[in-house]
Length: 128
Image (tube, rainbow, N blue to C red; front, side, top):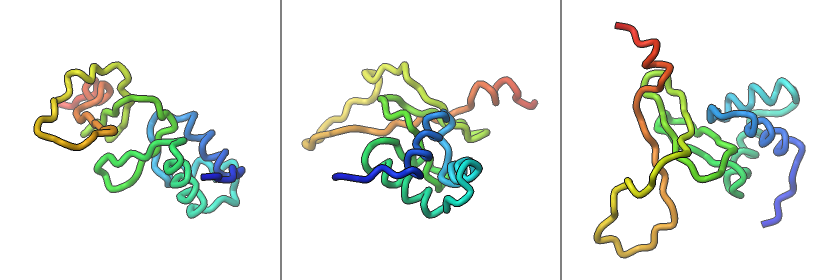
């Protein structure tokens, strides 16, 4: 698939590469619009979709009804805080601790694993 690289797509990807908080399309739009006031929300959505489809970014479905985006496509997992909703990367995880799949005849090509709990910040600021 030969996809032309546009100024808007480059701007969106460069913005995502500066973030580790896994922003939504609306957040990307608000931030990119500060540099390029003529960009539309539709353009941001279309370019995020293209970037995800060609594997240059990851689209995360975290259960909150909106897609989040991650420019770091290296192998890692995600932690979602159930209190504040922050999303954090987990790089040092031993996959051998994941459950073994039994009685499956197909070929698994990948998986998505999300961890849920309370982040360090929420634990430190816990109200009694």
